[in-house]
Image (cartoon, rainbow, N blue to C red; front, side, top):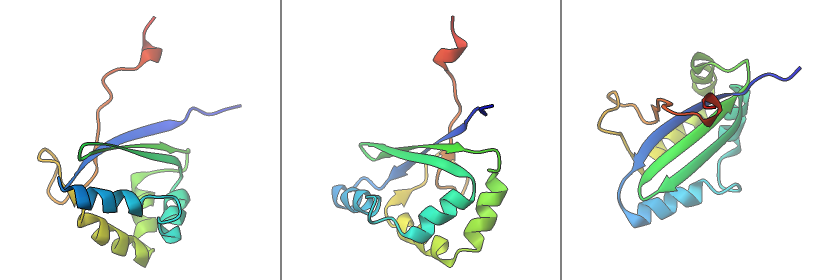
Amino acid sequence: MSTKTQRYCFALDLKDDPDLIAQYKQFHQPDKVWPEITESIRQSGITNMDIFLTGNRLFMIMEVNENFSFELMEKINKQNPRADEWEELMWKFQQALPWGNPNEKWVLMEQIFSLSDTN
């Protein structure tokens, strides 16, 4: 029996600086992301994560399994000293969206359309 994949989508802006954007893209190449980070991501129940870029706007899609929760993800990240290091480094490139909460990076997006809901 297959289970439906839960998906979350987020947005975040990078600082509008071509050099910083190029560096950010480099950090996200498969061989450049720190293994401790990808391990934490997987341990929290995230089965797939894709990040897309247009201009300086990022869009992230997370697919998660039934074990995932934002609380579990936070707990796992707190147990990983490299997670704080990574987040601090990434903040050099990122800027909060104006409608996000204070100190909130990735803002959860509201789904407003799904083709599967139409006839």
